[in-house]
Image (tube, rainbow, N blue to C red):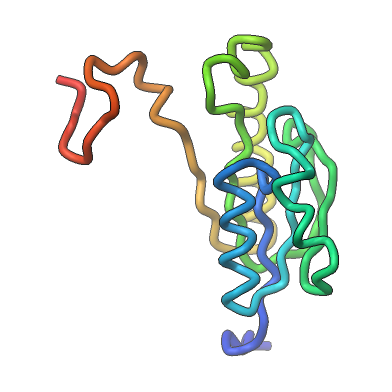
Amino acid sequence: MARDYNMRKRVMVTGGAGFLGSHLCDRLLEAGHDVLCVDNLFTGTKDNIAHLHGNPHFEFMRHDVTFPLFVEVDEIYNLACPASPIHYQHDPVQTTKTSVHGAINMLGLAKRLGCKILQASTSEVYGDPAVHPQSEDYWAM
């Protein structure tokens, strides 16, 4: 059966209780989608999504993406990973697991569901830049 893409999509945002993730959840809800926000609250906070809890099209699931997740969604936005040095240096092993195992788990889920996935990262993976703040034309060379 062909999916009618004019209907409401069920979209999952991992890292959805983080700064960027919570704003993405807001935008997806405004666009008329059902949003499943997945976060283990290692760096994200419930405060970032508290205003969404009364919304019938929003659901929060506390889950660590280093473990497989079996849900049914139409799109995945994988933003799960500590992005600031103070957080990822606190537990570099868990940060690496989140980046690697989390991405593998979300890619596997997307493959199983046949859905689109956006895999996000942080500029921190490129090391300490020579220029602060970085402009759009800065290429660290």
